[in-house]
Picture 1 (cartoon, helix red, strand yellow):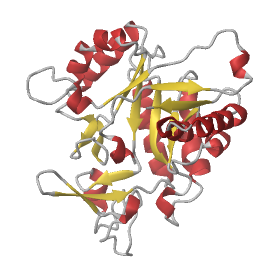
Picture 2 (cartoon, one colour; picture 1 turned 90 degrees about the horizontal axis):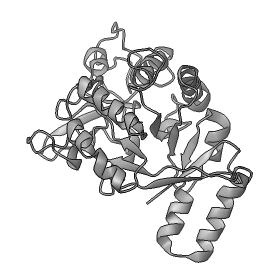
Picture 3 (spheres, helix red, strand yellow; picture 1 turned 30 degrees about the vertical axis):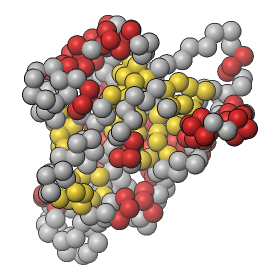
Picture 4 (cartoon, one colour; picture 1 turned 90 degrees about the vertical axis):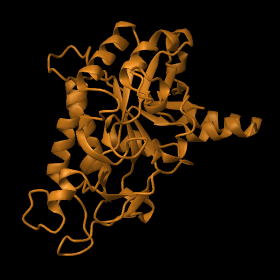
Amino acid sequence: MNTKIIAAFLLLMSSITSLAQNKSTETKGEIIYHVFQRSFYDGNGDKQGDLNGLKQKLPYLQDLGITSILLLPLYDADCYHNYFANDFEKIDAEFGTMQDYISLVKEIHKRGMKVYMDMETQYVAEKHAWWKDAVGNLKSPYSDYILFEDAQHLVPSTMVFDLRHLNSYDGTFIKVTTVNLRNKHVLEYNKKLFSFFVDPNKDGKFDDGVDGFRLDHAMDNLDGKPALTDLFIHFWKPLLKHLKKINPKLKNVAEQSNWKDYGFDYFKNTDVDRMFGFGLQQAIISFDKQQLIQNADTILAKCPAGKEQIIFL
């Protein structure tokens, strides 16, 4: 869960690949700007950063040398970072409309840049349709879409860190629960949701679609919950396989829950393309030369061919 890195949204990224790949005579990398769109640039004067504001500043980003943009979640949510959705299928009105989003993506691609979308569908807030219909309603079609702690489905499960709610800036509480990622209907829902952003008009051209996803808080056993084990096999791998059938050129990056881990098991068990190089990132900010050499050597030696570690500041 990246609520802890909200203060550092100039997230410059490049990639380190295996030693075998580095023998190539030409190495092409990406410089990715992780945009916190709510505070990036206000395009309509309402004191909220928005999609049209970001579109206006694409020349500025290119002048900086940025090749790619990573967007925080765009869906409707009450949290300032837009995790914990009220509606996965609705663009937050403070950012703009779906038409604004599609226009932004097309402009990014016209400039030869790439765009990635941050997705976190493991949790939902109390305004979400699954919560509203399933809590206290055993006959709800969504009764097994979220986890409950009681047979009557009156008590939704906790989320990460065993939290049941989040404190909002205005003193209100945002209730949040965990989605049942082992439910086959939830998997199918995610396939459709992600697929839309890969190719919104389904024409196979992808000028209006993302170049990949950042998978927030991806885990094999989500938050240690007994009901959510073996998610690499039952959720993440089939989801990514489905998306690659639509666009084989997608580059998906997963955020491992253990920030001291290089995530090599993700490469093996989920078919994800990239992982976050937390080991090297921590070595960089330590200014410890030996730690930097050791961690870089670990990545270069063990990163599988065709896979990448995203190095970020």
